[in-house]
Image 1 (cartoon, each protein chain N blue to C red):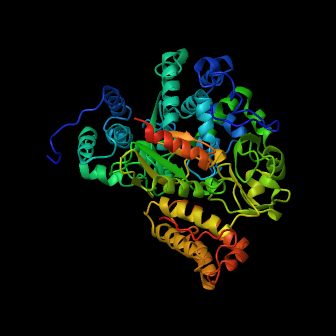
Image 2: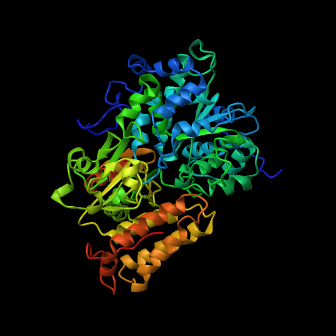
Image 3: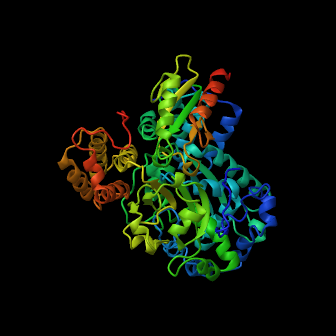
Length: 437
Length: 167
């Protein structure tokens, strides 16, 4: 099973079954309070379920951080159309590998979260959209779903509650953009993953033109604990405006990279030093990305007093994002980091809207020649100008996701760009590397 | 009739999966099954052939052009044959920080092929890929669908040597 050594500083709510023998089996799940939250929810009204989720202060764990209870309340429950639950398991944000461990170690927790969402909005079918690369997780989920059907936890009249629910897995085929909710819905309908214009939001017009609750894996996985122990208990784990824990992926130059479940509001410094075991080889921290490559980078000085929650990170003009923490030490070439991030966005831009399609490609080309020592001074401002012209001007957040880290790197590490000027090779490496498209 | 007329058949397991997929979506929404069908069929056929495009189009009730239009968007759907073992090296940011780029270069040298190329014997193909969701266990590679974590050049050599000898 895939998970790192746990840290004593973790608060294990969603990951409570990790490491148990056969943690993915229905038997283990049922023996450890599994599906109790569903049975409890089945006796509640939909309004009561949504209220409990609102009280928990659960915010969307995919990156945007939108309050989950509010999102659910937007679904027009009285609509004559069928309603759907869609799970976003397209985890593709660089730095993020948490949904993978949640599904691998405890698939029934996800299924139970989906069932409770179904009760809350009167939905009777759900789809788990899994990125194509995670094929083995589709097998894990299919097995868990089959087990749940066999033992009456899915299908008709679940455990005599009168509630019916059908659940399916759906494979993607390699596209970062399909993690964006409206592009995911297009892809689910057998089309190219290009985003839809909003409004209407998926809560009203989502999958198959019907009202849809679409949340990240981790968001659904938090729901059973909320119903079981009460929304207030979950809220109390976090900070005033954001309840619970966050699955946090420590990546990059730390001694103990891994996925750790930390309370929202966990101090950043303590996370790096004590959970992550400090920076590798005793080096100093140069740059910190709080939640996936689309977040603006923060410097060591900016992290003074920072905690891992939406507001603390937002006050430093970055985002908590997906929980994919990327740690870069003092020997990291920030031009190279910016280039690699931009190569990714240029590759993944769906091409639907021009500021993103052209902007990412121009930026990739500029950064490429910069890192090869062929940049000119005016390029430094040009990088900033192009990024600013993309911000807020694209159809979906991918354009912003590409512009934000780039802008932050060029503003905070301008000197490193100057160090690459006039044919000087990269100060951190002499490799005259070729960069693929 | 826009299709070639010749119908493809697949293994019983794949046929069963197709059957399930075609009933997984609301009535009239069979098109939803297209992408999963293509990727599962690719695993069996090796790559997306013209014949396969026609077959999937026929089964989900769209034109082959519509299938082509969709599949060209997805980076895991391949119109050209890959090696029997498709080695995908991630060089995205978290892997890069742990020398994923050097690992990719090492693989290129060792195999004598580059991005999306196949060895002469058709055994191994190589691809530099974007984030595969193994960031905390970087650098990572995938061989077909199998993950290998914290891969060193030495470990990569072992993996490639094993693949070369595999049937």
